[in-house]
Length: 249
Image (cartoon, rainbow, N blue to C red; front, top):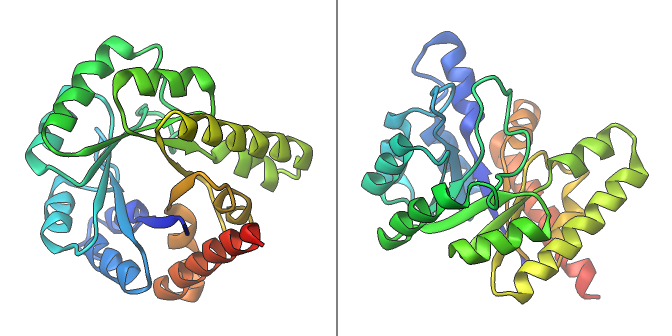
């Protein structure tokens, strides 16, 4: 099975908010991504609203013909928003105001008592719950115990090591992702992956047999400056399909 591609449109909103204008419109970007083959749209509603806004989420839910994956922190405010919005998927991520972007995976094991009721309420409300975690057996076990049916493995460290020229480290981190994906899938979890992936780094991750979905955003929006969003998404879809085809040979 070829992994699904979820396109994160957060940074279209980042550009809009830099000038406080009404453009570019993240919803328009989402529709372009879908027309290019995106299987879903991801948007992170942050506590500080630095990019995606509440109004964006409302508009996406009204306009999309594909599932919306709403990324949120495990706070009371975000729980109420997600319960009202009822997105197809809710991915719980760690969040700090001072970070530029998500810096690592959620400590599902350490936050068990806080996450358990949060996850239960989202699941009872009809959203597929995902936990954004490191490729770590302890975190996978915690996700299982918490009743989250999906984990998204953080690929940022692997991608950063690749671009730093630390290829032995990137290979070791890729092997860690492979092992974690296999470990989680064997125990019944649906395995997703994402963060920091580009045309150069996506192929080995897409080739992991157990990965059923990739969520990619910043790179696609960046590449779209030169290639247009339709071209960037189409190219990423091609690379994902080729990775899985090569793995099947």
